[in-house]
Structures are given as C-alpha cells and as structure tokens.
Amino acid sequence: MKKPMCTLALIMALVVGSNALAVVTLPEDDLNPAPFREGPGWTLQAWYWDTPETGVSPADAEVDLNDYGTAVAEITVNGSAAWMPEYLGQTGVFEVDRTELSDLIITVPNVPQENYEKHVWVQMVFYADSGHVPNLYVIPEGDYSAYQVMTKVAEQAVDDNYLHVTYSLTLDFNPEWEYVFIRPGDCEMFVDSVIVETQCIPEPMSMVVLGLGSLLLRLRRKQ
Figure 1: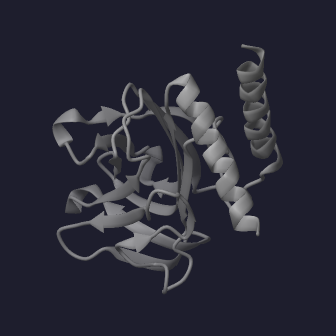
Figure 2: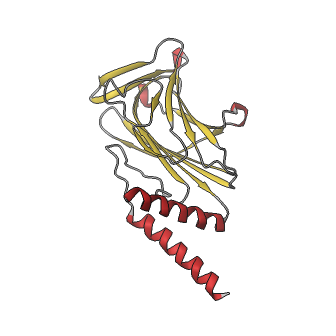
Figure 3: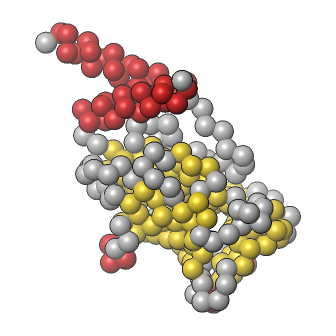
C-alpha cells in the first residue's frame, strides 16, 4: 500500500507546485481574484471592449484561459447595443439599459463531465445611476427555470463614478455550460469590464487526475 500512497503524494505535490508557480496577469481591473484561481478545473475569461475591434456584440473573450471552449459575451437589446469609445473617464464602455430590456449574457463552457460542485466568480467594473448595482444570475445550460442568484461579496470605488463589484456562487452540480446573466437593477448601466472565473470540483481522486492533466497541458504549452 505504501507505493500507491507515495505515487498519489507525488502527483498531488506536482499539481500544487505547478499551481503555485503559475501566475496570471490581466491587463486591468483584476482587484479581487477568485480564491480558487489556478486550481484544477479552473477557467478564466475577460472582456474590456477598449477598441472598436473588440467593442462588438457578440464578442469572444479577450483573455481566454478556458480549455473547454471559447466564452462569448453578448448584449441583448430591443434596439442596438451601444458601445462608446469613452464614458466618464473609462475607455471602451457598453451601455446596458433596463428600460430597453437589454441584458449582458456571457456563455461559459465547462468540463464536459459530471462533477459534484461548481464555483462561479465574477468581477465587474461599471457605472450606474444613483449607485444601483446590477443583478447577476447563473443559468445552467440555458435552463432559465433553474436560474440561481449570485451573491455580491465585495464592492469598492474605482474612481468618482465607477464601481468594482465581485459576485460569487457555488452550484451543487456541474453543468456542461452556463450563462452568466447580467441585468441592470432598473437603471441604465455602463459596463467597462467583466472577468469570469469558474471551477469544476470533481471527487477527490478525480481532482488529482484532473490536476495532473492540467500540469501536463501546461508543460506541453511551454515546449
């Protein structure tokens, strides 16, 4: 029994060591990284919309650290989505207006297998009238009847107008993909950036195997 235990310990040490050495640096607005960042089954996707080329809808993630597919952000609106090159001192801003029934919907692909838990962590920088804060929901596999409300866990001012707000949610299952659904709280909202991190949590032994796979993938990328 000692040899398998030693092998397991070595695998876990390699996984932990690889995560400790890896460092993710985002262009901006990464003020409150997810506590599970760089862990097994982790993904990250970010949008900044700073240029006319990236200020489109739908838009693939500008920072894409998701091995399971490409995350996409889309503004849904009765009329047309309004991108502004600058608004109140921030570069590249999307207007999302509740009165126009517009929403920001982000599609995030996941590990394509059943796991018993899923973490979702969202950072947003935005401006909204009268200090309103948007409502965030997770829609597993597009099933709106199964939506779950994300909890605001932190808030801080970026400047005199914009806020940085962090939301969190843990699902007791792992959908193959989900919408992160951002809806203005009965107001007009100007979104400067969104960072979404997720983590699929398998059973303990599966987590070790998944972590080893993540390590091998990183080593292959470096070659």
